[in-house]
Length: 434
Ligand code: AOS
Ligand code: ZN
Ligand code: ZN
Image 1 (cartoon, rainbow, N blue to C red):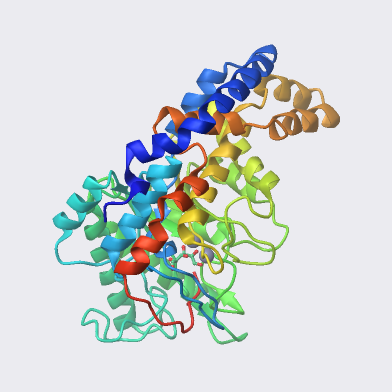
Image 2: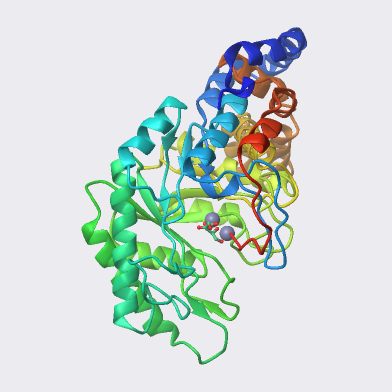
Protein backbone atom coordinates (compact mmCIF):
# COMPACT_ATOMS: atom_id res chain seq x y z
CA UNK A 1 0.00 0.00 0.00
CA UNK A 2 1.23 3.50 -0.82
CA UNK A 3 0.23 5.42 2.26
CA UNK A 4 1.05 8.97 3.34
CA UNK A 5 2.09 7.32 6.62
CA UNK A 6 5.17 6.04 4.78
CA UNK A 7 5.82 9.21 2.82
CA UNK A 8 8.64 11.58 3.80
CA UNK A 9 6.94 14.68 2.39
CA UNK A 10 3.70 13.93 4.23
CA UNK A 11 5.57 13.43 7.52
CA UNK A 12 7.52 16.65 6.92
CA UNK A 13 4.23 18.49 6.36
CA UNK A 14 2.95 17.14 9.68
CA UNK A 15 6.17 18.18 11.42
CA UNK A 16 6.36 21.68 9.94
CA UNK A 17 3.88 23.40 12.30
CA UNK A 18 5.45 21.74 15.36
CA UNK A 19 9.17 22.10 14.60
CA UNK A 20 9.75 25.61 15.98
CA UNK A 21 8.27 24.72 19.40
CA UNK A 22 10.32 21.52 19.54
CA UNK A 23 13.49 23.50 18.85
CA UNK A 24 12.64 26.05 21.54
CA UNK A 25 11.92 23.38 24.16
CA UNK A 26 14.98 21.40 23.13
CA UNK A 27 17.23 24.45 23.53
CA UNK A 28 15.77 25.21 26.95
CA UNK A 29 16.28 21.60 28.10
CA UNK A 30 19.78 21.73 26.62
CA UNK A 31 20.62 24.68 28.92
CA UNK A 32 19.13 22.89 31.96
CA UNK A 33 21.15 19.74 31.26
CA UNK A 34 24.25 21.76 30.54
CA UNK A 35 24.07 23.14 34.09
CA UNK A 36 24.07 19.48 35.23
CA UNK A 37 27.13 18.74 33.08
CA UNK A 38 25.13 16.74 30.52
CA UNK A 39 25.52 17.23 26.78
CA UNK A 40 22.01 17.05 25.28
CA UNK A 41 23.34 16.23 21.80
CA UNK A 42 25.02 13.07 23.12
CA UNK A 43 21.79 11.97 24.83
CA UNK A 44 19.81 12.71 21.66
CA UNK A 45 22.09 10.61 19.46
CA UNK A 46 22.02 7.71 21.96
CA UNK A 47 18.21 7.88 21.97
CA UNK A 48 18.09 8.10 18.15
CA UNK A 49 20.26 4.96 17.93
CA UNK A 50 18.07 3.04 20.38
CA UNK A 51 15.80 0.45 18.77
CA UNK A 52 13.17 -1.99 19.98
CA UNK A 53 11.60 -4.72 17.82
CA UNK A 54 7.89 -4.88 16.95
CA UNK A 55 6.16 -8.22 17.54
CA UNK A 56 4.45 -9.45 14.36
CA UNK A 57 1.61 -10.89 16.45
CA UNK A 58 0.73 -7.54 17.99
CA UNK A 59 -0.48 -5.66 14.90
CA UNK A 60 -3.82 -7.47 14.85
CA UNK A 61 -6.41 -6.77 17.56
CA UNK A 62 -5.66 -8.86 20.61
CA UNK A 63 -8.21 -10.45 22.84
CA UNK A 64 -8.74 -12.45 25.96
CA UNK A 65 -10.00 -15.99 26.44
CA UNK A 66 -13.44 -14.40 26.70
CA UNK A 67 -13.64 -12.46 23.48
CA UNK A 68 -11.82 -10.65 20.78
CA UNK A 69 -13.23 -7.51 19.19
CA UNK A 70 -11.86 -7.22 15.68
CA UNK A 71 -11.10 -3.85 14.09
CA UNK A 72 -11.00 -2.77 10.48
CA UNK A 73 -8.00 -3.48 8.29
CA UNK A 74 -6.50 -6.30 10.31
CA UNK A 75 -3.45 -7.82 8.63
CA UNK A 76 -4.27 -10.96 6.65
CA UNK A 77 -0.77 -12.39 6.55
CA UNK A 78 2.85 -11.62 7.38
CA UNK A 79 3.14 -9.21 4.43
CA UNK A 80 0.29 -7.07 5.79
CA UNK A 81 1.81 -7.32 9.26
CA UNK A 82 5.13 -6.04 7.94
CA UNK A 83 3.38 -3.09 6.28
CA UNK A 84 1.81 -2.15 9.61
CA UNK A 85 5.18 -2.54 11.34
CA UNK A 86 6.73 -0.30 8.67
CA UNK A 87 4.23 2.43 9.54
CA UNK A 88 5.12 2.08 13.22
CA UNK A 89 8.80 2.41 12.36
CA UNK A 90 8.39 5.19 9.82
CA UNK A 91 6.39 7.44 12.14
CA UNK A 92 7.96 6.72 15.53
CA UNK A 93 11.44 5.96 14.17
CA UNK A 94 12.32 3.39 16.85
CA UNK A 95 11.36 -0.07 15.57
CA UNK A 96 13.53 -1.06 12.59
CA UNK A 97 13.15 -4.81 13.24
CA UNK A 98 10.26 -7.25 13.64
CA UNK A 99 10.01 -10.42 15.71
CA UNK A 100 8.35 -13.18 13.71
CA UNK A 101 6.33 -16.07 15.08
CA UNK A 102 6.27 -19.54 13.49
CA UNK A 103 4.25 -21.21 12.15
CA UNK A 104 1.93 -18.15 12.19
CA UNK A 105 4.26 -16.15 9.93
CA UNK A 106 5.74 -19.04 7.95
CA UNK A 107 5.95 -18.66 4.15
CA UNK A 108 7.60 -20.82 1.49
CA UNK A 109 9.45 -17.95 -0.14
CA UNK A 110 11.77 -16.80 2.64
CA UNK A 111 13.98 -14.67 0.44
CA UNK A 112 10.87 -12.97 -0.96
CA UNK A 113 9.82 -12.22 2.63
CA UNK A 114 13.26 -10.87 3.46
CA UNK A 115 13.29 -8.68 0.34
CA UNK A 116 9.80 -7.38 1.06
CA UNK A 117 10.85 -6.43 4.60
CA UNK A 118 13.96 -4.78 3.16
CA UNK A 119 11.92 -2.60 0.80
CA UNK A 120 9.96 -1.43 3.85
CA UNK A 121 13.20 -0.64 5.68
CA UNK A 122 12.73 -3.51 8.13
CA UNK A 123 14.98 -6.30 9.40
CA UNK A 124 14.32 -9.13 11.85
CA UNK A 125 15.00 -9.60 15.54
CA UNK A 126 14.62 -12.88 17.45
CA UNK A 127 12.07 -15.30 15.97
CA UNK A 128 9.60 -17.25 18.13
CA UNK A 129 8.54 -20.88 18.07
CA UNK A 130 5.08 -22.07 19.02
CA UNK A 131 4.45 -25.30 20.87
CA UNK A 132 1.91 -23.74 23.22
CA UNK A 133 -0.96 -24.69 20.92
CA UNK A 134 -1.71 -27.43 18.41
CA UNK A 135 -1.43 -26.78 14.70
CA UNK A 136 -4.19 -28.86 13.12
CA UNK A 137 -3.51 -29.73 9.50
CA UNK A 138 0.20 -28.94 9.82
CA UNK A 139 2.11 -32.08 8.84
CA UNK A 140 5.03 -31.13 11.08
CA UNK A 141 2.81 -31.20 14.20
CA UNK A 142 0.68 -34.37 14.11
CA UNK A 143 0.93 -34.85 17.89
CA UNK A 144 -0.78 -32.69 20.51
CA UNK A 145 0.95 -30.32 22.93
CA UNK A 146 -1.93 -30.57 25.40
CA UNK A 147 0.38 -32.03 28.05
CA UNK A 148 3.51 -30.15 27.09
CA UNK A 149 6.13 -29.96 24.40
CA UNK A 150 9.88 -29.83 25.10
CA UNK A 151 9.25 -31.32 28.56
CA UNK A 152 6.52 -33.79 27.52
CA UNK A 153 6.56 -37.26 29.06
CA UNK A 154 6.30 -38.82 25.57
CA UNK A 155 9.62 -38.79 23.67
CA UNK A 156 7.76 -38.55 20.35
CA UNK A 157 6.12 -35.24 21.35
CA UNK A 158 9.47 -33.96 22.63
CA UNK A 159 11.08 -34.91 19.32
CA UNK A 160 8.35 -33.07 17.40
CA UNK A 161 8.81 -29.94 19.54
CA UNK A 162 12.60 -30.15 19.18
CA UNK A 163 12.29 -30.48 15.40
CA UNK A 164 9.96 -27.46 15.28
CA UNK A 165 12.38 -25.33 17.29
CA UNK A 166 15.31 -26.34 15.07
CA UNK A 167 13.19 -25.51 12.04
CA UNK A 168 12.34 -22.08 13.50
CA UNK A 169 16.02 -21.40 14.18
CA UNK A 170 16.86 -22.29 10.58
CA UNK A 171 14.13 -19.98 9.27
CA UNK A 172 15.39 -17.23 11.57
CA UNK A 173 19.00 -17.65 10.52
CA UNK A 174 18.02 -17.47 6.83
CA UNK A 175 16.17 -14.23 7.51
CA UNK A 176 19.14 -12.73 9.34
CA UNK A 177 17.52 -12.94 12.79
CA UNK A 178 20.01 -13.28 15.65
CA UNK A 179 18.12 -15.67 17.92
CA UNK A 180 15.22 -17.99 18.61
CA UNK A 181 13.05 -17.23 21.65
CA UNK A 182 11.53 -20.30 23.26
CA UNK A 183 8.48 -19.74 25.39
CA UNK A 184 6.43 -22.78 26.38
CA UNK A 185 3.10 -23.42 28.01
CA UNK A 186 4.55 -26.59 29.60
CA UNK A 187 3.54 -27.08 33.22
CA UNK A 188 0.78 -28.58 35.32
CA UNK A 189 -2.61 -27.64 36.71
CA UNK A 190 -2.71 -29.98 39.73
CA UNK A 191 -0.26 -30.85 42.48
CA UNK A 192 1.15 -34.26 41.68
CA UNK A 193 0.30 -34.03 37.98
CA UNK A 194 3.93 -33.52 36.98
CA UNK A 195 7.25 -34.39 38.55
CA UNK A 196 9.04 -31.02 38.79
CA UNK A 197 12.52 -32.51 38.53
CA UNK A 198 11.90 -34.98 35.74
CA UNK A 199 10.00 -32.37 33.66
CA UNK A 200 12.83 -29.83 34.09
CA UNK A 201 15.44 -32.43 33.12
CA UNK A 202 13.48 -33.41 30.02
CA UNK A 203 13.20 -29.71 29.11
CA UNK A 204 16.95 -29.16 29.46
CA UNK A 205 17.71 -32.27 27.37
CA UNK A 206 15.38 -31.05 24.64
CA UNK A 207 16.84 -27.54 24.59
CA UNK A 208 20.34 -29.04 24.45
CA UNK A 209 19.31 -30.96 21.33
CA UNK A 210 17.97 -27.77 19.74
CA UNK A 211 21.14 -25.90 20.76
CA UNK A 212 23.38 -28.54 19.19
CA UNK A 213 21.74 -27.96 15.82
CA UNK A 214 21.48 -24.17 15.67
CA UNK A 215 23.78 -22.45 13.22
CA UNK A 216 27.02 -20.68 14.28
CA UNK A 217 26.60 -17.84 16.73
CA UNK A 218 22.80 -17.98 16.56
CA UNK A 219 21.43 -17.65 20.09
CA UNK A 220 18.68 -19.32 22.06
CA UNK A 221 16.61 -17.11 24.35
CA UNK A 222 14.69 -18.89 27.13
CA UNK A 223 11.59 -16.95 28.21
CA UNK A 224 10.27 -17.75 31.65
CA UNK A 225 6.73 -17.13 32.85
CA UNK A 226 5.29 -17.73 36.28
CA UNK A 227 1.90 -19.11 35.26
CA UNK A 228 -0.61 -19.26 32.42
CA UNK A 229 -1.59 -21.37 30.58
CA UNK A 230 -0.53 -23.79 33.36
CA UNK A 231 -2.04 -22.68 36.67
CA UNK A 232 -0.23 -24.76 39.27
CA UNK A 233 3.34 -25.10 38.03
CA UNK A 234 5.24 -24.01 34.95
CA UNK A 235 8.45 -25.72 33.87
CA UNK A 236 10.36 -22.46 33.32
CA UNK A 237 8.43 -20.38 35.83
CA UNK A 238 11.07 -17.91 37.00
CA UNK A 239 14.49 -16.46 36.28
CA UNK A 240 16.11 -19.07 38.53
CA UNK A 241 14.88 -21.97 36.44
CA UNK A 242 15.67 -20.02 33.29
CA UNK A 243 19.23 -19.33 34.44
CA UNK A 244 19.84 -22.93 35.56
CA UNK A 245 18.64 -24.17 32.17
CA UNK A 246 20.63 -21.59 30.19
CA UNK A 247 23.78 -22.43 32.16
CA UNK A 248 23.27 -26.14 31.55
CA UNK A 249 22.70 -25.65 27.83
CA UNK A 250 25.64 -23.45 26.83
CA UNK A 251 27.22 -20.07 26.25
CA UNK A 252 24.81 -18.87 23.54
CA UNK A 253 21.74 -19.81 25.55
CA UNK A 254 20.43 -16.75 27.42
CA UNK A 255 17.51 -15.67 29.62
CA UNK A 256 14.80 -13.39 28.28
CA UNK A 257 12.85 -11.14 30.65
CA UNK A 258 9.22 -10.41 29.76
CA UNK A 259 8.08 -7.70 32.16
CA UNK A 260 4.68 -9.35 32.66
CA UNK A 261 5.94 -12.80 33.64
CA UNK A 262 6.80 -12.34 37.30
CA UNK A 263 5.16 -12.79 40.66
CA UNK A 264 3.38 -9.66 41.91
CA UNK A 265 5.73 -7.10 43.48
CA UNK A 266 8.84 -8.93 42.39
CA UNK A 267 11.87 -6.69 41.92
CA UNK A 268 12.36 -7.05 38.16
CA UNK A 269 15.21 -4.55 37.94
CA UNK A 270 17.15 -6.68 40.40
CA UNK A 271 16.58 -9.77 38.25
CA UNK A 272 18.02 -7.75 35.38
CA UNK A 273 21.11 -6.94 37.46
CA UNK A 274 21.58 -10.60 38.40
CA UNK A 275 21.31 -11.77 34.79
CA UNK A 276 23.78 -9.09 33.71
CA UNK A 277 26.14 -10.32 36.43
CA UNK A 278 25.80 -13.89 35.13
CA UNK A 279 26.41 -12.74 31.54
CA UNK A 280 23.06 -14.33 30.68
CA UNK A 281 20.69 -11.45 29.89
CA UNK A 282 19.14 -12.19 26.48
CA UNK A 283 16.93 -9.14 26.39
CA UNK A 284 13.35 -8.10 26.98
CA UNK A 285 9.75 -8.39 26.03
CA UNK A 286 8.51 -4.97 27.08
CA UNK A 287 4.90 -4.43 28.13
CA UNK A 288 3.18 -3.27 31.28
CA UNK A 289 0.74 -4.79 33.73
CA UNK A 290 -1.26 -4.23 36.86
CA UNK A 291 -2.09 -7.83 37.75
CA UNK A 292 -0.34 -10.51 35.69
CA UNK A 293 0.71 -10.96 32.08
CA UNK A 294 -1.64 -8.13 31.08
CA UNK A 295 0.41 -7.20 28.01
CA UNK A 296 -0.59 -3.53 28.26
CA UNK A 297 1.42 -0.84 26.50
CA UNK A 298 4.94 -0.31 27.84
CA UNK A 299 5.03 2.40 30.52
CA UNK A 300 1.22 2.58 30.74
CA UNK A 301 1.00 1.52 34.39
CA UNK A 302 4.41 1.70 36.04
CA UNK A 303 6.76 4.04 34.18
CA UNK A 304 9.08 4.24 37.21
CA UNK A 305 9.64 0.47 37.07
CA UNK A 306 10.50 0.74 33.38
CA UNK A 307 12.95 3.52 34.26
CA UNK A 308 14.52 1.37 37.00
CA UNK A 309 15.01 -1.48 34.52
CA UNK A 310 16.77 0.95 32.17
CA UNK A 311 18.76 2.30 35.07
CA UNK A 312 20.27 -1.20 35.45
CA UNK A 313 20.90 -1.44 31.70
CA UNK A 314 22.60 1.93 31.48
CA UNK A 315 24.61 1.04 34.58
CA UNK A 316 25.73 -2.22 32.93
CA UNK A 317 26.85 -0.33 29.84
CA UNK A 318 28.56 2.30 32.04
CA UNK A 319 30.44 -0.46 33.89
CA UNK A 320 31.21 -2.16 30.54
CA UNK A 321 29.72 -5.46 31.70
CA UNK A 322 31.30 -8.17 29.54
CA UNK A 323 29.17 -9.43 26.65
CA UNK A 324 26.36 -7.00 27.49
CA UNK A 325 24.21 -6.70 24.33
CA UNK A 326 20.53 -7.28 25.12
CA UNK A 327 17.78 -7.54 22.50
CA UNK A 328 14.89 -5.17 23.01
CA UNK A 329 11.46 -6.30 21.88
CA UNK A 330 7.85 -5.34 22.56
CA UNK A 331 5.37 -8.07 23.46
CA UNK A 332 1.89 -6.66 23.89
CA UNK A 333 -1.74 -7.41 23.19
CA UNK A 334 -3.86 -4.51 22.00
CA UNK A 335 -7.45 -5.25 22.85
CA UNK A 336 -9.02 -1.79 22.85
CA UNK A 337 -6.60 0.43 20.91
CA UNK A 338 -5.36 0.59 17.35
CA UNK A 339 -2.25 -1.64 17.57
CA UNK A 340 -0.22 0.74 15.40
CA UNK A 341 -0.89 3.58 17.83
CA UNK A 342 -0.08 1.37 20.82
CA UNK A 343 3.16 0.10 19.32
CA UNK A 344 4.35 3.59 18.42
CA UNK A 345 3.46 4.87 21.88
CA UNK A 346 5.19 1.93 23.55
CA UNK A 347 8.36 2.35 21.51
CA UNK A 348 8.42 6.00 22.57
CA UNK A 349 7.90 5.06 26.23
CA UNK A 350 10.78 2.58 26.12
CA UNK A 351 12.96 5.28 24.58
CA UNK A 352 11.80 7.71 27.24
CA UNK A 353 12.88 5.35 30.04
CA UNK A 354 16.24 4.93 28.31
CA UNK A 355 16.71 8.71 27.95
CA UNK A 356 15.82 9.27 31.62
CA UNK A 357 18.24 6.56 32.70
CA UNK A 358 20.99 8.20 30.65
CA UNK A 359 20.49 11.35 32.74
CA UNK A 360 21.38 9.63 36.03
CA UNK A 361 24.54 11.13 37.48
CA UNK A 362 26.34 7.78 37.89
CA UNK A 363 29.42 8.97 39.72
CA UNK A 364 27.29 10.96 42.18
CA UNK A 365 25.06 7.91 42.68
CA UNK A 366 28.07 5.71 43.33
CA UNK A 367 29.32 8.23 45.88
CA UNK A 368 25.98 8.26 47.72
CA UNK A 369 25.86 4.47 47.67
CA UNK A 370 29.36 4.16 49.09
CA UNK A 371 28.63 6.81 51.71
CA UNK A 372 25.38 5.02 52.70
CA UNK A 373 23.24 8.05 51.89
CA UNK A 374 19.88 6.57 50.88
CA UNK A 375 18.11 9.93 50.63
CA UNK A 376 20.55 11.45 48.17
CA UNK A 377 20.92 8.18 46.23
CA UNK A 378 17.17 7.95 45.76
CA UNK A 379 16.97 11.64 44.84
CA UNK A 380 19.66 11.13 42.22
CA UNK A 381 17.44 8.59 40.47
CA UNK A 382 14.31 10.70 40.93
CA UNK A 383 16.01 13.76 39.49
CA UNK A 384 16.69 11.86 36.27
CA UNK A 385 13.23 10.26 36.21
CA UNK A 386 11.38 13.52 36.72
CA UNK A 387 13.27 15.37 34.00
CA UNK A 388 10.90 15.89 31.07
CA UNK A 389 12.87 14.35 28.18
CA UNK A 390 10.05 14.83 25.66
CA UNK A 391 12.04 17.45 23.66
CA UNK A 392 14.91 14.95 23.28
CA UNK A 393 12.57 12.24 21.98
CA UNK A 394 10.84 14.66 19.60
CA UNK A 395 14.16 16.03 18.32
CA UNK A 396 15.53 12.49 17.77
CA UNK A 397 12.47 11.73 15.63
CA UNK A 398 12.65 15.03 13.76
CA UNK A 399 16.32 14.45 12.94
CA UNK A 400 15.54 11.06 11.40
CA UNK A 401 12.53 12.33 9.43
CA UNK A 402 10.07 10.50 11.66
CA UNK A 403 7.01 12.22 13.12
CA UNK A 404 7.30 14.66 16.00
CA UNK A 405 3.84 13.51 17.11
CA UNK A 406 3.50 9.94 15.74
CA UNK A 407 -0.12 9.28 16.77
CA UNK A 408 -1.44 12.57 15.31
CA UNK A 409 0.50 12.04 12.08
CA UNK A 410 -0.83 8.48 11.85
CA UNK A 411 -4.41 9.64 12.31
CA UNK A 412 -3.92 12.37 9.70
CA UNK A 413 -2.52 9.82 7.24
CA UNK A 414 -5.81 7.90 7.06
CA UNK A 415 -3.89 4.61 7.08
CA UNK A 416 -6.46 2.62 9.09
CA UNK A 417 -9.32 3.65 6.80
CA UNK A 418 -7.19 2.83 3.74
CA UNK A 419 -6.30 -0.69 4.89
CA UNK A 420 -9.87 -1.27 6.05
CA UNK A 421 -10.97 -0.77 2.42
CA UNK A 422 -8.39 -3.29 1.17
CA UNK A 423 -8.32 -5.98 3.87
CA UNK A 424 -11.53 -7.94 4.53
CA UNK A 425 -12.89 -7.98 8.09
CA UNK A 426 -11.86 -10.86 10.34
CA UNK A 427 -14.20 -12.70 12.66
CA UNK A 428 -14.24 -12.19 16.43
CA UNK A 429 -13.81 -15.34 18.44
CA UNK A 430 -11.46 -15.68 21.32
CA UNK A 431 -8.17 -13.93 20.97
CA UNK A 432 -5.75 -16.34 22.49
CA UNK A 433 -3.37 -15.23 25.16
CA UNK A 434 0.07 -13.84 24.49
C1 AOS B 1 3.66 -15.47 26.42
O1 AOS B 1 3.07 -15.14 27.45
C2 AOS B 1 4.92 -14.88 26.01
O2 AOS B 1 4.95 -13.55 26.45
C3 AOS B 1 5.42 -14.98 24.57
O3 AOS B 1 6.58 -14.25 24.50
C4 AOS B 1 4.64 -14.37 23.45
O4 AOS B 1 3.68 -13.49 23.89
C5 AOS B 1 4.08 -15.38 22.54
O5 AOS B 1 5.09 -16.17 22.00
C6 AOS B 1 3.26 -14.77 21.42
O6 AOS B 1 2.16 -15.52 21.29
ZN1 ZN C 1 6.79 -12.51 25.92
ZN1 ZN D 1 3.55 -13.06 27.97
